[in-house]
Image 1 (cartoon, rainbow, N blue to C red):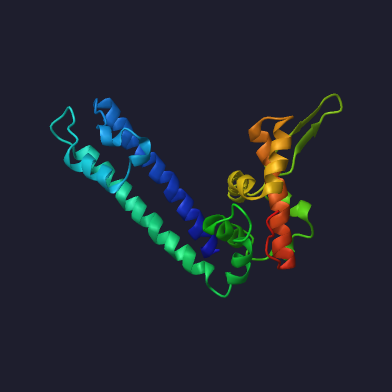
Image 2 (cartoon, rainbow, N blue to C red):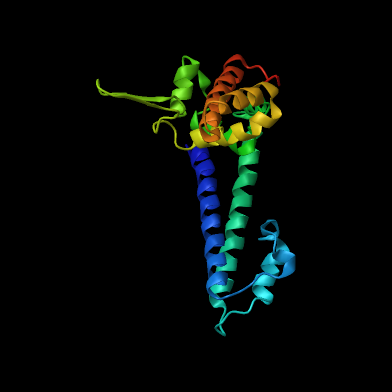
Length: 225
């Protein structure tokens, strides 16, 4: 359970960091601060040089910039916390409890350190608790919805039930998988012919989940197609 909480804690830190960055940018906006040319590209934001600029060069309308400095402290402290917990998760992946299954999951396209370890900790490292692929996909919340009142039948691509942590991670991994696995990429393209991309990727996620289940169940590495 503590391993599961550790992974979930990292996600909360990620969300906290996003909010802190948004608060900082909002403060700059309300104070009329414009970005210098070297920081016009958003990809350069939150680098070491960007943080130095915030602390040393930014001038606010008010004489005091304590609020900005405190926000900078929050961003940097949260980053350190994320780095610390990520290192601990990486250490966990090398322990006897997880290493075998982690190495198997790492061969699945789109599944990196966090997604793989999230899956293993949420499942208590035991895929055998699921008798088949459908039960596994259902746990992820990736099975289609279907509501039938007798007069009207409504179906959707994804149910709201299932694990709230793993489901979104598998969908996110699917965006990577369609570029690394030819078969999944072709399947995504064919689905996009009849539905919108955000619905097509859910169908890919179901396929990826089934293949992930097979990898863990058979103890066989994923073969790229």
